[in-house]
Length: 308
Image (cartoon, rainbow, N blue to C red; front, side, top):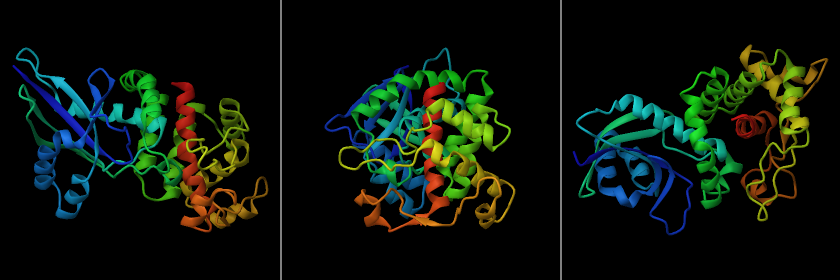
């Protein structure tokens, strides 16, 4: 049987130059949406509303899986979509990349024609945060994805529940639109790895793993934009406090009068410091809790890179 099952997810924020298709691992690859434009437009027009279909049809790159179909073995589509989502998280661990929250599946034939007949999954879009969006998913980052995607797939099909839960927490944190909840989920992911029982243990284990002076915002964008100067030792306790206030439904204002480690979570701060013009042009200042929500995702990514 000369056909394959094709699974695709439209992405935003990808720049791979003139490449048409880039292999990542085994069945997984990145492809220009133009390669499948007609099939994608037909599918989104059938499954989505007009506004969302218009947005998705403008995607330039797709994350894809091509799996050969045979008479001897049928393809379990729901399971294939689940594995596809696991593989997508390898990209997010390297550098959070915006998605549309949509996974389509269909058939690719010997003559290279494609029919995307199904919507395999519909979730909240994953949002990367402003600092991550300043750099596209480019060739050097794709090389890093290649280096870990096999490991991520093994973890997600393996028995190490703590690592699997940490990756699931990252996905949920990227999907949630509110920064406070994103922080709660991201810190939960780190706690799944650390098995920390309190704020002091969390701070120590995060500092021990990444180093106290490690940057919370990775240096993706130099030399054009220097990274924000927040270090692990500066914000570890604050992350845990925001997580605890949200988890227990407490007033965030109470963190400012905490007897052990007070912090004003609602204070407006320059997002990255006066030396960085990009954030200043976007916003003069943001609430510290919002900044922590973004930083927590990047820190979970760094934790996962270390322990996978």
